[in-house]
Length: 174
Image: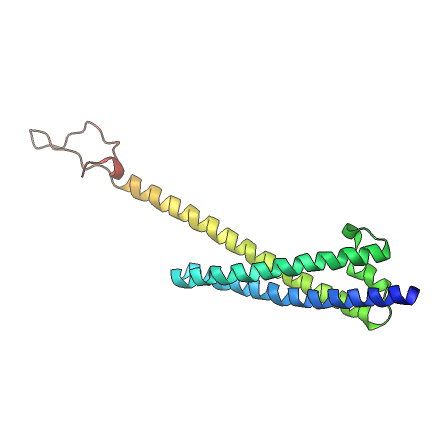
């Protein structure tokens, strides 16, 4: 009976390792996609930006699908080991396995975590760039609207009327 459970645990660990490897690949693709989108944004290539967004949606859906499957397998492994899902780690699973399977799982989990961290960095860079861009646009619009004052009207004497100098570009009559 113990052998049957041990075999099932080994199968689940192997499946988890495969899923983690697939996740690593998908996360790398998402990271590359975000980087390409950022470059398209910075260079003002709107068409490339739109295409990238569509590709990222597909990649994100696949990554979510893999994450869901990883969670299912992890829960099943946790029930085998009587470890709550939230406390389950690759090292704890590896400790229950014989041979190289545990080491492979731990190494793959480390690689996947590294790629996930790279993705988070790229996400933050993109977020910061968008915030900066928005602030620049607001500042530019503010400068434009404050730079152009209403030219005013000339009075009967030919001198400029000094009645109201607070009008701005968007307040002026065209």
